[in-house]
Length: 204
Image (tube, rainbow, N blue to C red; front, side, top):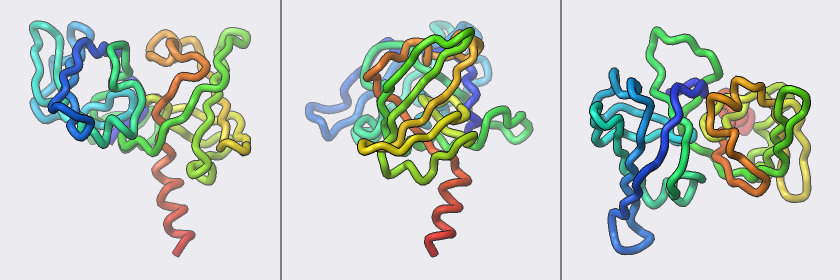
């Protein structure tokens, strides 16, 4: 379980295929800030751009850890199949503050950035989400984009899906990999966990 509050910026430095065709997954090597692994243990859960993964190896000297990601996960997420910066969040502990919202680390689908521009001191981010997620998205509700807990300011149903508009304050831009987004970039989207359960109850 996570909160959507990013605890560090990582960098995928190496991708190793675990087999000879697309049915196999990959092993990712991720570098971290110098003290990030101090409290990490083998088998810990960590969210990479919002996708929950298991730490399979780590080295506190080189500040790197590895995860094995299945072909299924690679096909259902964005940004984990290439070298580059990613958002990191360690799993929530029982005594931690819930600073964002309840995040499972299970990506629901992939959205596409349709707008990313500076407005005043902040940035407006718009993401086109698949139509299947539209009923879970609401004005002033929560959505997780690449692992970051964000508040939706506007929600607009379109012929192509559902576009959400989000305001990113300077702190978020400076401390997450969202600063590298551009129009056309694919992003991982997780809907609010409570909305998921409410929809299930109402459908019965």
